[in-house]
Length: 341
Image 1 (cartoon, rainbow, N blue to C red):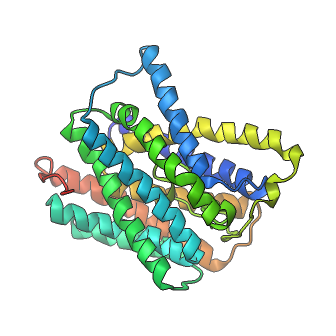
Image 2 (tube, rainbow, N blue to C red):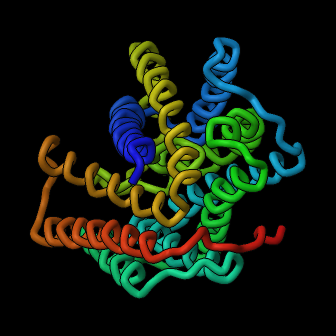
């Protein structure tokens, strides 16, 4: 693994875990309910930050076909909306299963449309990883028709949007920062259009992703049960106290700063690795946040949680070993076409 890739992985994990913790405080403690609006703000701040960096000479912009950017941005915004709706219409346990299903769906899409082959060793390690995360996080599986349909749409749109993050960089010959520079204004606009109706519609926003990573791929790692607290509906009562206005603004501003790092590292990891590796990394973030809740915040922990975390970590190690072996055996990059749209 190259040092640059290792740095990208570390930045992704550290920034994502940080933003989950800060978001949890903002939403659960301070009672800020508008999670999708916050995500849209994060992307807008990212767009502004990148343009400041470009003016200072740190970022080199590159033109990308507008039609492709709009299509890519719409899909990302829709995936965030469906993930938030999935949590709004389903139990926390079913929402966690939705996120777990993203990896096998991504593997299937890459095999069918990109002709990428995954060894039995890689698939076995992914199964162990997903089983461990399921044991540690899934507590209930209450099903309903609308929630199931929304979850299926969330899985499909999230898989394709993350795969496109990788393929667009190769197709348009840009690196991750250039793609994020070009796409972030469109993504912020799309999220801004759906944010307020979505947050207000889902119980005033209080039930939407209380542990969300709040990036363009906010549902990909840790969900609302990241701290073991479940999906409580905080409503808007937490924001009625005027004395909370300044703390909310300050903490929200902190999340915006961290979100720039989250969005940057997300595009970087998917560009240098692939969507499956990014999802595996996302589950590592879930395990780390769970551990933070158990051992730092003193949340209740039982043998099932510890066993699940142990199994998940074993799966991650096995996946890393399998990926290294597979890359060593590979004679070249896998070939494939562009996903039909």
